[in-house]
Image 1 (spheres, helix red, strand yellow):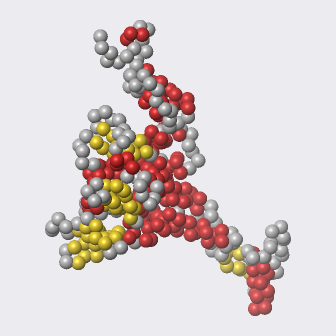
Image 2 (cartoon, one colour):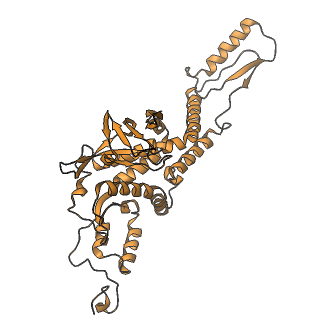
Image 3 (tube, rainbow, N blue to C red):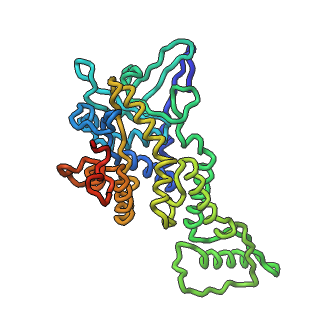
Length: 362
């Protein structure tokens, strides 16, 4: 951050993407960004909660250089790494929004002044006002610019990197250990050189020593200076790093491991505690920048994340339809099936057929 004349400039270091070299960070970023990008987003009516199929803003994600999936994925990925996700609003001559252009957060600079209402952004030397951008951020120190999760998790990432580097050095050395060679009896110089040469040849990772038995001259004893992987708790440390990083991203640890026995409960926890805040902040930004009608709003369809096996889905749908909460056509939509004529009424099964329809006129 640089300060000039009361004006603050926020820079975006490229090194944040280096955190993706850690498998746990990569998995967390992929889970969140892919989940958001995979969901359908559309304009709905606040009163009916129904999608407005012919609204022009439904196409705003599909008339760009990037696909809707890649646009949202890149914005969310920048949000996680840099703290901010940007897309320029492309406008027609009448000022209406017609498309979105992804702007890499590492190439966007923000300027703001607490003393006056003067906030703007620059991208490749061009000045952009807040009204020109879709700007998503989740954590912030000043209310203007976001702070990436990577910055909060810096210590955990340093520990994880150190553990990975240690593991790499350990295996790169051919699992050999460092040590001091002791002789139980005094040795002449040439004898010491001969012993060292024999020991180096026996333990050299470049030599093919598999299945070979070697005898070392003299009565030698090796005192290890480095510790083994077990003594260093390398495996335990790497396992702890996974759960520690998952906590920063608020992701259930079981999604990063092989312990996925209760998939339905895990996905529900993932949706409510991790994904929902990102959905809300994106919806809020789209609504305040793109929609002027108070009766309309953007909405993510999160149902794709909570689909489980067919048996659980069937029980879920039957429960809602039998209770008169979901219509048959809404159930068919959930299953990806086309609507049927006459299936838009809420029905509660009764013995008397005349009592089936909810709110039926008497």
